[in-house]
Image (tube, rainbow, N blue to C red; front, top):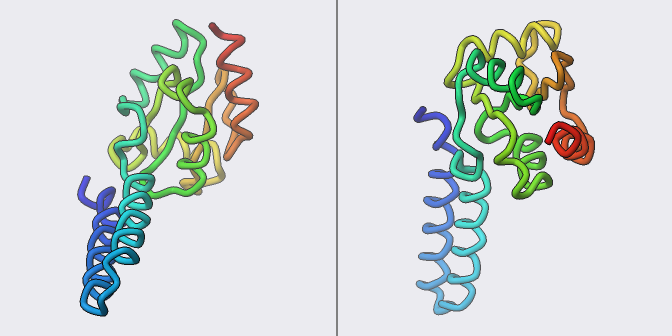
Length: 145
């Protein structure tokens, strides 16, 4: 769990250091803007922007019932962040599995990607799709509703 927060914590600490340097140079406005930029980057890279993760087995069970895709992701992955942001509010309708927290999910991703833990991997009707187009995922989600 701790490694999911390393990048966001580093961004907050770096932003604080840069802002402190700007304040000591007499530029509080620049310091505030830079600190806000670093905080925004930390927020986007934190696990908090993702819907609550569940285990791979539970996600597969739920997907079999409601037909919604399962997304395997990990914190700090820029492609996972891109998928999450582009899906917008509809992201909460998907079943999210954090591969760093769920060994079964990580194993499923490796199986689908020739031994590589490549995320995001989205499983739609039993078919894995590695780093899919967010529009395609949104279309599949709307067709399953």
